[in-house]
Image (cartoon, rainbow, N blue to C red):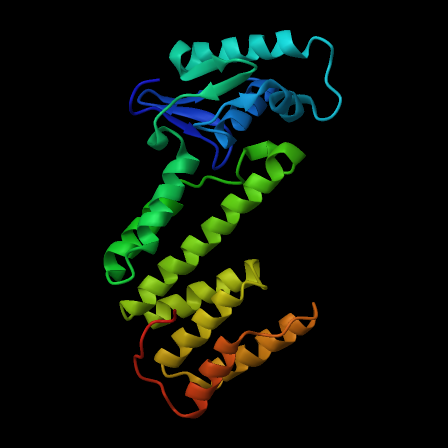
Length: 251
């Protein structure tokens, strides 16, 4: 791989190069590369790779087939990028040459920037821009990839929340409220989104609507037998006290 090439799994699995997007090839090639990306930096056992490619029932020719798929990926990525280590293979690339790892590094950096909302917003947007669709593309619902896809998507929503919180800290309460209403439609059980919406409405002086949103959250959670956290009680107390100024950001 060239230094600026990027293996992409935050959407359909492919390779981004200076010359454009290059296909990884067959479903088996994508499965193998996806499994190596999940284990990036570590040796992934051949047994683990068999499971990623064929599930619990693999053919007798599985070992030789994996060698063939590895050879194809080496032809695409470079012979030095996939190392054979005993009964395992390891993807040997830099952290920022895999979009999922680059995304996680940006998430960590953004999380540490609570005292600089403008820069935090910029980093969040850079992280979110790496996403092109479901993690691992058409493999997102396959068992070998489902848990990792769910974990990555949870991080994506957390970054989205952090970006909106940064916008709120910069005084853009009206814009944030509109974006949060749309986000809640997609993720109705993410309490953090509801709390940020109430905060945005409060800062925008719309106390009555903020109270209504709190009531709607209670109803939504009750449908699945849950109760809201203490943050809602604190927000409602501030609303009723008429605290519509610009208090500290939500923690």
